[in-house]
Length: 102
Image 1 (cartoon, rainbow, N blue to C red):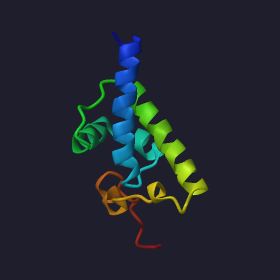
Image 2: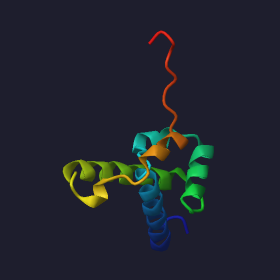
Image 3: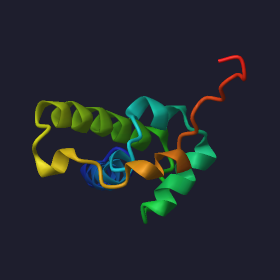
Image 4: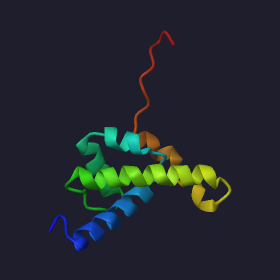
């Protein structure tokens, strides 16, 4: 079933939903792929999706995130180029810890 047309369609639908949720929070494709499996599972549940079983779906999500970011840079005045929940990024991607010497 994993490589049938139906499975591919289901994977794409799930990836689009996850990418939409993730992009609105300002997470990049690289940041998504750098997350732990547990964090990605929590992210999927927060997006009201059953967590994907394979990295294949997450790789597609990362690709979609990168494509949307490039599109948003080319169309900055379009309403869809504005992230709706960028302040929630901190829930998924922690900023690097800064040394007190910085």
